Length: 158
Image 1 (tube, rainbow, N blue to C red):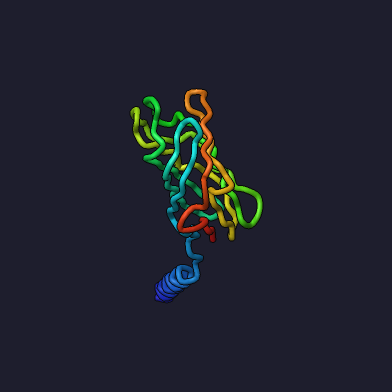
Image 2: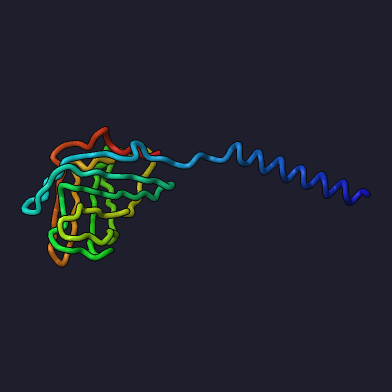
């Protein structure tokens, strides 16, 4: 009988500790805003409105860029655009997001690159204005720059 009481007491203690742990667990890091828009110019390759979508998990972050104003000049296969997105940082050095992640795109389709991976620190304020997007498509380098700050404002990381 004594063994059952110890086992029951241990189970109750473990349950209480688990509930307490959940109550004091740190909340997941989040970036705000989750999306921002800006206008880009890409030289001979055009330009126009673009959208950035951000995610964060601790110090790891991703950015995805989409634009219906910047379109695929020819069919592009999936994961064939090498992209480097450099973001100006209000709290220190620029942050770089990179990767070769993109969906397959037909001629004239809106450009999408990402999610591109990067590292952030708590307190970073990232804006495409002052940064750039460099895409290498079939050996051709396309560089896009913002013509002004992103709206509604910089990405703020927890």
